Image (cartoon, one colour):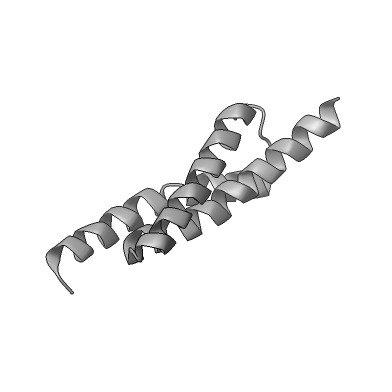
Length: 88
């Protein structure tokens, strides 16, 4: 493994793991009132597009980071949409 791939994997770990506390908190409390729906929609779509980019360019750090982040962001987005729907 070269140093650029290692750098990418460390960066992927740091940015991906940052979503874990929010996902856990959202699942436990089901409180999404302070989360912007439009931001999470754009973020989740962007993460999906980064995942596609990683797949098409065969970039392992980008694939791993965005696959995991997409799952975590999707969980938060689903709770946010559910919470927003229940308010209406």
